[in-house]
Length: 71
Image 1 (cartoon, rainbow, N blue to C red):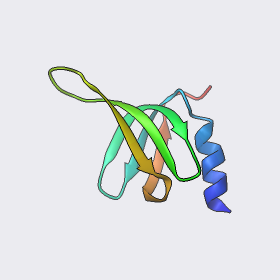
Image 2: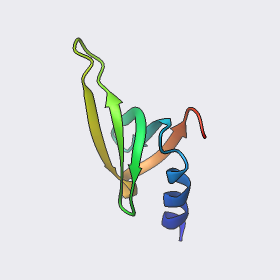
Image 3: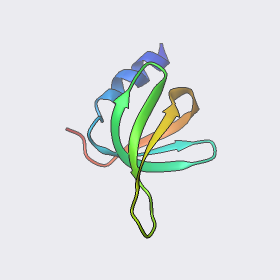
Image 4: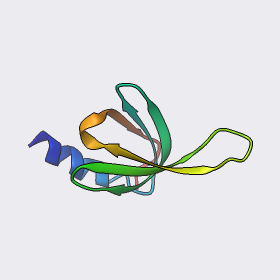
């Protein structure tokens, strides 16, 4: 039940900049996909080239999500 509520709430932030924390990492980027099991965001890599990385995070591994701007 809580997993389905989390999924629905997380979908509201698609297109927004979010911070996603797992037990070992903190990712920041634009959320662009949420499915039943994962979320994907585009993270700007800090570095010389400014590469964009697509990060896939299992929903079960997420400790918290902080959104910068909601639609």
